[in-house]
Image (tube, rainbow, N blue to C red; front, side, top):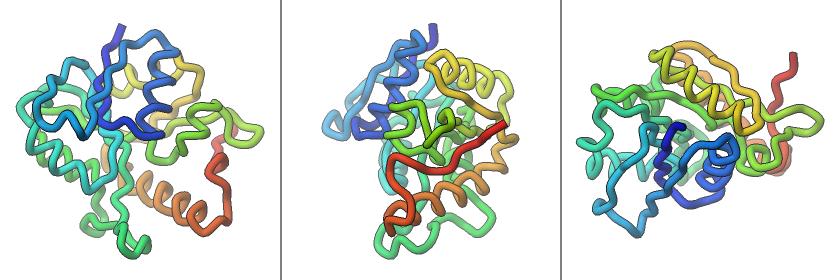
Length: 192
């Protein structure tokens, strides 16, 4: 059984934790209120926080994240304008996290999903599909298995370089929902 530590207690953190727990995983959450005093016990750490909160977590927990799988779910939006990504052109939040944590195995996942679609397991008439990217095949296979055990589909989108495209899709989906062109219970679906 895989043990997960999820930074965050919001809708996404709860939905991801629910999927993983439904698949038999052990899940613990670390809240912002716990500060830097919490102990990371999970084999896999999920950063289910807004992108601006990531730097504080990495600063406080870098030693504890060493050697672990770290799953980045963020979409690095400019929250003031909601009109651009704040990472270098061609880059990604996941790549920035990997640079900050060279001893961790960083994956990008869940950023193209809304909490409601993770919780319901559906995007319209289609099954919810989690797209993920990373350079560690074993870590990706384990997360895919955990997501599948929780009742969702998962697709390996390729190397960590693909996080750039996943973040672009996540950004587009968020801006469409925020402008009420799609619902927060909808989103993009992947069909066979």
